[in-house]
Amino acid sequence: SYVLTQPPSVSVAPGKTARITCGGNNIGSKSVHWYQQKPGQAPVLVIYYDSDRPSGIPERFSGSNSGNTATLTISRVEAGDEADYYCQVWDSSSDHPEDVVFGGGTKLTVL
Amino acid sequence: EVQLVESGGGLVQPGGSLRLSCAASGFTFSSYWMSWVRQAPGKGLEWVANIKQDGSEKYYVDSVKGRFTISRDNAKNSLYLQMNSLRAEDTAVYYCARLVRELDYWGQGTLVTVSS
Image (tube, rainbow over all chains, first blue to last red; front, side, top):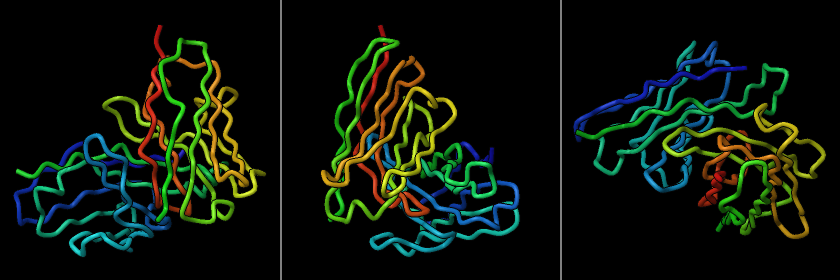
């Protein structure tokens, strides 16, 4: 089955830019979605189809996807951005094209 | 406003059964795939199952195949997860979510604890 690899943790100072990566074999050929999850809360979609933002998500959140790496970029990081972030794809190339695949998650710490 | 509200979680002994429900509102439930996703304590998200709009297609993660059954009642705007032969490793918060290609709306989750 398809595997998505995320760094366990990323740290960034307030006001700086955080980049969270999601690695997968030829992930650039897939659509990648990103979720933010704060402690005790349900996940929230922050980026879909690689780089689109749902309504209500700040423009500081952006995404890109090419080759073997997708990236979630958070500009001008705020304390409220501290959370776990997960990438997700549909493994359309597998025997089970309807399976949903998540990365292992990245804890973003705002210093 | 889209709302998904899970219920039915609780404490169950190993080998036992539990049925989770998810009440949907604020959108045309019958037009969407739906999913169950779980999160073990301190762990990441794990997809559990998907069901097509009319219930004709269902997909499961390997670890629950033969034990869990996803279903839906479009007349009641409700999604279900029947969980049988529960194991300690099934302990998790279970979320229902609306599936497009992304999971665009999630419920607040319901906790299932499998323990003797």
